[in-house]
Image (cartoon, rainbow, N blue to C red):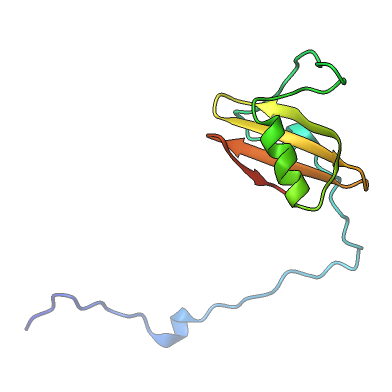
Amino acid sequence: MILAGCVMQPPQSSMRSSYTPPPRSSAPVQQEAPVSLSESLDPSEQIVDMPPQSGGRKNGELSDLVERMARKNACTPATGATLIAKTSGAETYQVSCQDGQQQIYKCELRQCRMMN
């Protein structure tokens, strides 16, 4: 008799398990507090602390590119793209639009994309 590949199955009665769902709470669901910029960054990123240039903003290598992208995304930059975080391979920019909205862009290896 060949038994290779055969598995003995337990009787059906031993496979039953009782499941009791956890009790539902009637307490209201609390919404999470907003996440700060430093909490939303990758652990390898750090907030840049560089002196502001003329106009009071922190320029990055790709500030002009990000400003052009913002214009294509229905944003007229109020002050331009501000560098808010930088690593060896990525830069993160914030653009304040004249209509009050904020746009965040992340540029990795000179390729930028809007984050929000």
